[in-house]
Image (tube, rainbow, N blue to C red; front, side, top):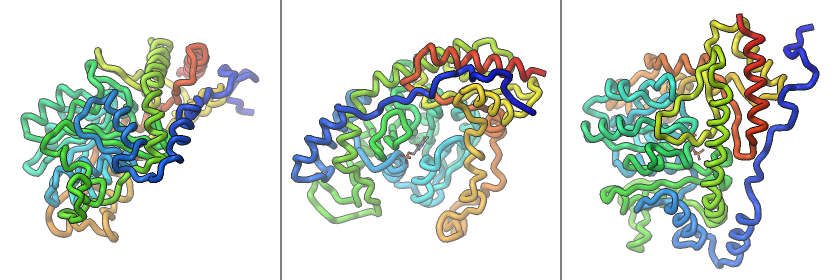
Length: 406
Ligand SMILES: *Cc1c(COP(=O)(O)O)cnc(C)c1O
């Protein structure tokens, strides 16, 4: 018998707390919505309320709600009017949504490595990847931890690059007391069902740029100039419109954002404090003055210190009732088949076939991202958790790791 737990009762002896995400606040908006004669987004009352709600947290001049976070990022990239083969620097630890818009615009995602302690883009490696074709840097505030925006704004200014913030995982996070998403040229957010706030599926992109802002809506709406009233598309733009049902839920969710973020932040910091000093753990590093909004909690294990491989440690933690996983992403993004096979359109990559780029994703390697994927452990965290619950989680983690020390 190889029972990973010596006790019969798991140390975390209560079910995973589950927040009640939708309630009377959403219902009130949805009830008002069904009285409307139209569910179309343009100047719709729910979409208008969503924009106003977003602006209360993110005071950006031009805000375009849309159908997903991927759409928000694609809209931002479209606005740049990339030439085929233009490069956008991206991290390899992210969601496919980070890369989709770049590839659809015939741009080239160029992977730079991440910082070993924050898991976000490493400014020094970003500098090394800049070429004459670089047009933008797309930073991802991964897990909810703000990137080093002082470094990235300096790099962008120096090299005349556009700075896009992928904030899909970082609702409510703050860099030096400024909300992430308002520091670069574009802030892009997701409201898919798994983010801090959700409306089934949805997204929003905002900018203060007078160069890109006035036409931003066209990139989400078939290049139909709603303000000019014309249906005279000048460029190719998809239909990424939101609709009133999604916007109604999003508007309600946005009123809950500060409370959700405050709770997640407190719980995340409490877990870090509770695990501080535990041998064999590298806890997430938050730069002084920043606010991490903990979409999830990611730490690293000093695996040589333990007698068991990571999967066994995760299994032992799960047996103690800890909601965790050994696998964050199966691979760094450049190792996904879409990149390895250069299968972008119809089994080929026209941008490469045409000679606009010589990028070969089979040769890309970001060693720090690879080592994070090899030794990280992901813990669930949500706003319904209490300090008493996290205290049990932290005690279970410390106990299991002690048992597994060499
Ligand atoms: C979720 C996510 C996206 C995509 O958002 P969708 O709404 O699912 O399209 C993009 N980037 C990151 C970092 C994400 O976590």
